[in-house]
Amino acid sequence: MSKINIEDETINIGDVWKSNEMLKEDIKGKIEIGNFDITDEAVALKKLTSTMHQYTKIELKLPNDFIAASREKAEGNDISFEEYLRNRLSGGISEGEQEEEPAEEGVEEEEEEEEEAEEQEEEEQEQEEKKEEAEEAEEEEEEEEAQEDEENGVRPDWDNEEEETAVPQQIVKVRCHNCKRPITITSSERPITVTCPNCSAKGRLEQ
Ligand SMILES: [Zn+2]
Image 1 (cartoon, rainbow, N blue to C red):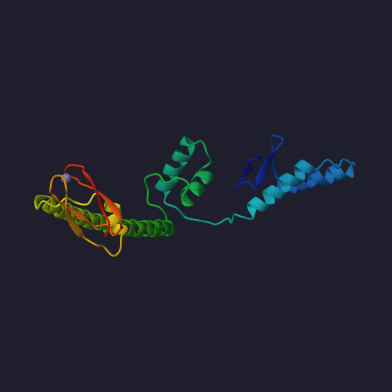
Image 2: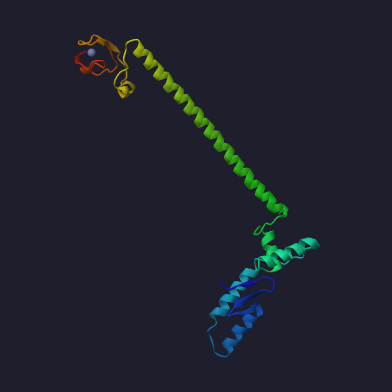
């Protein structure tokens, strides 16, 4: 990549700084003597021209102390004073001092958008937490119910999944032929083999 000096409007080609006019002269000179190897000059001329089209020279009065401080900082960064100012004004370097107004507005807008996004995220998270809490409460309730059933001598059914899928539910209470404890059958499947949750004795329920 060839370097371009924005202030001088020159491009570094073959270790020499050439202006637009100089490159045109070089190309013309080469063609006149029958040397058509002008690719480097043509490429450099195109690059210099298109680059300079992106810049406009303006006059700008700046405070003397700001200029002095900027010159020092430019030296510290090993770049030209103009290059330093250009970077600084276009947001490339921001050291200490406040940015130009338009840049600040742009930054604020971005921040606001970010804040909005964050707020939305927080809200979503809260809603999710509430949902989780509700689910947990429901689970606890179910557990309590199950515990109550157990205390009343009714064992929870031994196939929870079936309880949820078997519709309509047909709750039948039978007594274990072995230990005589009540067994609750919530499955509507018939015939069904029932295993006593207390003594593991197996029985068959036809209807
Ligand atoms: Zn039993």
